Length: 112
Image 1 (cartoon, rainbow, N blue to C red):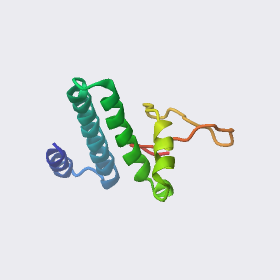
Image 2 (tube, one colour):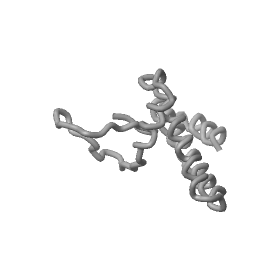
Image 3 (cartoon, rainbow, N blue to C red):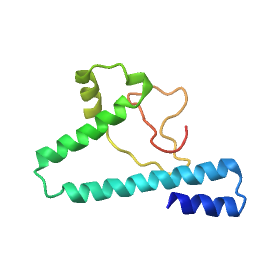
Image 4 (cartoon, rainbow, N blue to C red):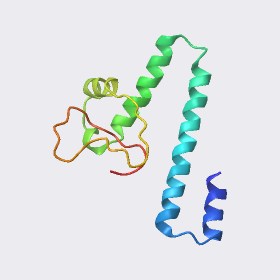
């Protein structure tokens, strides 16, 4: 799917920044489809095992962030347990400059 998208973008001489954005979104949506397939596949397992699998995925996300790469396992797991997924639409403000915040966001796709 990515190969075909790239070929179409190159055929129509799409500007590099737009091409990068389209391919990045394509990659992101493929990951979302994988997550749905994973949920469906795991649905036959006991809920405790499903929770452990998703915790492992969250731990992997935390470990992939350079700022958190040196944390110990206990702290990484504690941080991973705090993660919730939020979908934001384009131009939706998650935070406002200068406002006091109690949350932290990890952008999996898009820009700040």
